Amino acid sequence: MPILTLEETDAWVAEQREAGLRIGFTCGAFDIMHAGHAQYLRAARAACDRLLVAVNSDASIQRYKNPLRPVNPWQNRAFVAAAMGSVDAVTVLDEDRPLPLILRWKPEFYIKGGDYKSGSLRSSSIVEEYGGQTVLIPVEFDTSTTRIFEYIQALEKHAVPEKPHNPEPAGLVILDRDGTIVRDGIFDPSKIEFLDGVMEALVLLQKGGLRLCIASNQQGIGLGYFGYRDFIDGNRVMLRQLGAQGITIAKIYFCPHSFADVCDCRKPAPGMLTRAMNDQGVTAARTFMIGDSQADIDAAAAARCVGYRVGKGMTILEAARDIIRHVKTA
Image (cartoon, rainbow, N blue to C red):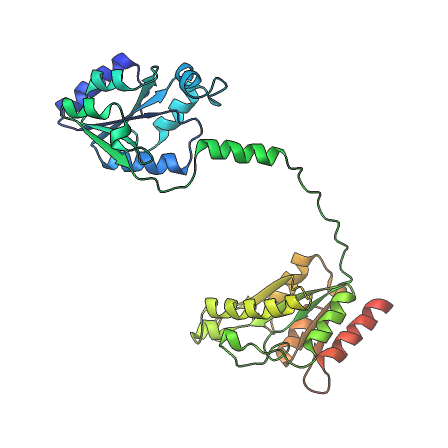
């Protein structure tokens, strides 16, 4: 988009008029272009056929706004304004008021932001006298250049926090979800129910320095019985209750595919387990799988980690105690 001198703008305006196009004119500092500017310019362009933007010169900003402004020199501000897809031409406003330019080109529309009122704009009556119209654009974004400056200043007052020195986990425990830690066959997120001994077992594992993840087959998603949102909402309820006991789940891995799909993640395939080990940086020798099905145990064997099948001769608490013993003697 062109950045024009005043004389070049004279010729540009004449060309638009010869083509029967209506010109909209607006002006401003545009010191730091933000969403409010973009919305305003797009709406301004929608009100006319061609949009001409006069960007205040550095000297004019220093006179009417702040002697320490602008942050960006005129060439930079004009370039950014001209790059906006809604702007057809950019020129300079070196005066404190746009009236001389308005009278010079007599645009069909004089456009300003909605934080003004038509009666408060001194140029409005003159625009109406030559047959033009003042257009006010409502503000949609609650932002401003001043507010951005204030936030940057506040950021400068804050030191960047040091990175935490979290200890390496003693190991990784990957838990099946349905039938292992919560009751199976419950699709209503509000009815998530933990099985006996789960809270105590997870607290014991976490106190033993083990990191906890979940790996769950969720073929009901692929079959259309429920959606991703239902699954995630159920997990939110589950995580909230675990969090109340001080239990943290590092990551939830799940396979949404149906039995008809070919994938590497649905247990007994080891995909979710190997991904968890890679993500958490824990070797197979220090990884344990707790589940309630043979598919869980087979997935553990395929991933070369130790598997515990609960619900038949072993409780989850017994599995947790055995894992703690294993870690201590390793």
